[in-house]
Image (cartoon, rainbow, N blue to C red; front, side, top):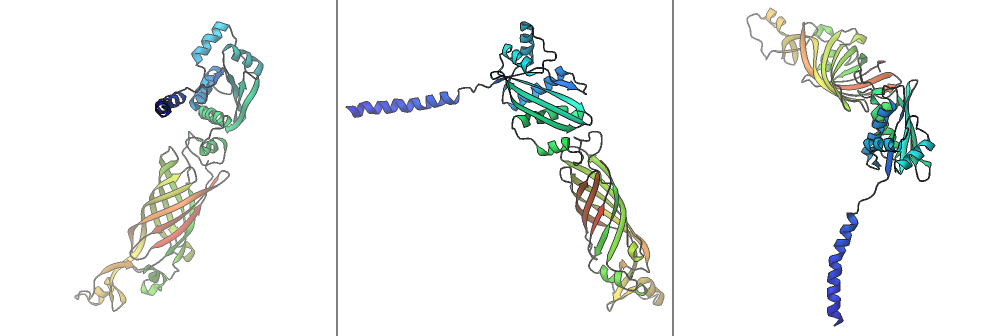
Length: 373
């Protein structure tokens, strides 16, 4: 008999368990009520009421408290006959908080002190009549970013994570430039002098080292470069910037040569760490001549036609580097990668580049500097 009584009991309990579980999960979690009145404002176009509205908005966005609606606060203030002017201290806020039926009150100030924006917040517990949390943060004088500063300070006070890159942009004077900390200027700009070296490889090395009487340049395949980088940014938002770079360079001055070139690059640069990648055409002037190889020896076409005017060349005619030839504009493609380092307000870009060519690749490194930002 007990077996038959026990089985229905188990069935009923099994039905009730999901009901109790559902009731537990659907029970709303009551959040503490926080009131935000005026936030003292000095050095800003926003008055304490507007600064308080910004602070109330950013506190509400955290989702940690039930922030009293400003219209409810205005209604209760009028009903209770409260005076909110200069109500920034603990005693006044505790008395006001009790009448607003709030659990906590948030107060503070946003001040421009010299070239720094100082934001100070205090969260006051009405029950204990004490300061529960407080936070002070200093920012650069970037007043258009005051709402973001308030957001970062509130999140810091409540122990919520902040984007460290944003904090650095707003607090460190020597951080990489961006539209955030320099809203009226272009981001990191590396226009300035460039110097470095280039290394030749492949068949062109032999032509560079050959004596001038055979059409070579009689130079080493490692040459010094000097020039200037001009750049313009056309995308100036987010963590990246896109830009065009124009780099006129003279190569070979250390060996008595003047080999001009112009690189026109399209680049992408990070404003968080200064890394950059760019690519584009390079135009340069080479002294070249038409000729052919006959039994392994190079013969210029002009010499052959002079000696044998009515006989076709015995091999295929091609064009190659020859100091006895004529200047000719040629092109190739360049790939560059680099990083910019900062020392105070000085930018120090270091770049490596690669120029592929069927006659021989070129590698190189360059360094520059400027004092922008």
